Length: 204
Image: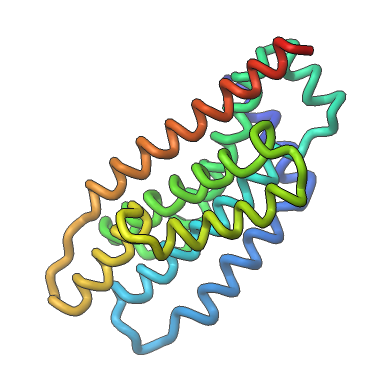
């Protein structure tokens, strides 16, 4: 798995396709974070912005390889492990993006990780191998991002709301429950995507 992660990380870096998610995240920060605002509000905006950025990074990682290279990796390590490496690379890149920008506040970092996990879950479910056509994958990803950011019951929304509420009340609680929910959803989404990848690999 270590070799696969290094391979996927090298693909991501050399492709320069990480620039899009990075610029998107930066644009959210420029628009949503203003000097003089409460710190927790700014952390909430920065964490929420990780959802679309992580979903985009996941799409980049799972679609980055040419078909021939993907087949070679799948033959060497198995389709499920190869796909898992791509998703984990997206998660690590998303987490690095969030922790590099956010101040070292435990509540902000936990919220950022929860949002990154939800974004990766969206990316895993809305791209190959489950949705192979760009015409379906991209709109589905956008719609799902809006749902997990704004819909009630979403761990991402709960984590961000916790920061905003803490800003109003002056009491900061680390959003561990939303983080746990996000981890479960991300693990489930990744397992579904990896199983689909293995099944399609077996059908070839």
